[in-house]
Length: 395
Image (cartoon, rainbow, N blue to C red; front, side, top):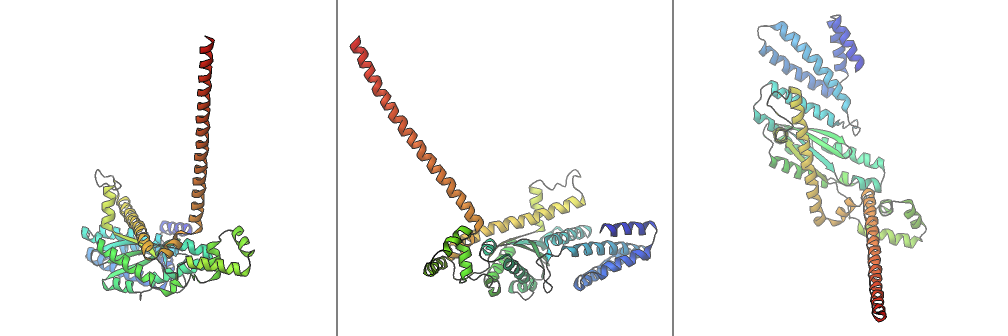
């Protein structure tokens, strides 16, 4: 990209317009077909707007159109580099950075077009955090977990999904994104306002659809002996003891572990969403965004709204995840226990138990010391009494 920038500067210095055009066309040709069609459609709309804005100056219309086309093509080409590692040839999914860029551009377009404030409610962000991935890593392999996360990405990309169809029936355009690790996001662009009730219903629908997905459930089989072994004995020393047992003892141990596990695994997640207006109100309320005394620029204002919209969606997702696990504890306690009992949590629990044991030992030691001090005090009192009696006799 740095070389491309240098070539552009050289072309501008030499006024080589044909070179710039050929370079931009080359970048356009490198885009995927779908993205290239979207770019062309965007430029057709832009040309119509420019023709309406400069009706008596066709030369200026062409000049501005070329400048916009050049910048937009370079931006889209750069965004195309933001493909997530969870992408597959059939189901490519963009990263969170791509979605943030689209949000930033949409805010800029709204400001330039002087859109009414109500338009801020028609654009939103949803965050998803999948449950049980750490436990799956402990029980299977990293390769299996990668395939599971790729399948999750495909699930969100599937236009035939029930929730996706429901959203599209409400004229909401959905752009799925991979937000890193076991986290995903949806960029929503609708015709109408997205209320808190809308986001709650969307979350409920997606959670139900995740739970009913047989394909996602197939990535973890609790009936597998290897899964039971890895789940119950994460350390080498534990496995060494296990393999020293007789076959009957091993079978009994794994049967006991199987009874602790859920009958089946199903995919669960925490999710939450927010629209631009809520992000704006949060930024203003926290003092991050101030429109007084010229403290904000066009760029800093957009970035503040963008950041607070995403942060609010992620905060609601975290709250939803806590509430969801509380409900799961009552509805499916075995799955709830599995989600909590991954290696990391067990290590934390082990350190906590060790600290509690050390505290108990310290308390016992202090109690012994206090008893010894009480006995010593009693002995000293007795000796003092004897000395006082002897002194009285001597007097």
